[in-house]
Length: 104
Figure 1 (cartoon, rainbow, N blue to C red):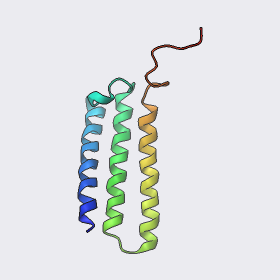
Figure 2 (figure 1 turned 90 degrees about the vertical axis):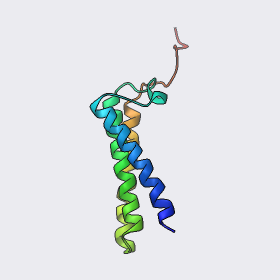
Figure 3 (figure 1 turned 60 degrees about the horizontal axis):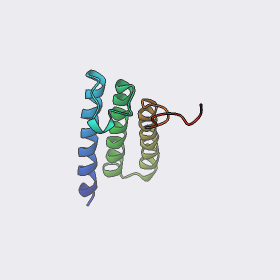
Figure 4 (figure 1 turned 60 degrees about the vertical axis):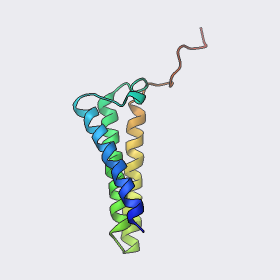
């Protein structure tokens, strides 16, 4: 039953890692994210950290049976995932998609 969860998450993590590697090496970002991303290399690092965190969580979810180790390692994986999301957020333009300011 665990394979039904592990396989899709690992595939998503591999896609995240491939996109992150393209962002780091070439400065390439997916077309849907090109407009808000200002620093593609930082965005790529955030994607790589998030992909690693997803794989980390799946390894400790599916392989480790000791509840104490699994609990703390999964918490560490969640902290890594949050770090990756923060890095991706820091790489984007401040203020979102606003065209102009309402203040004079």
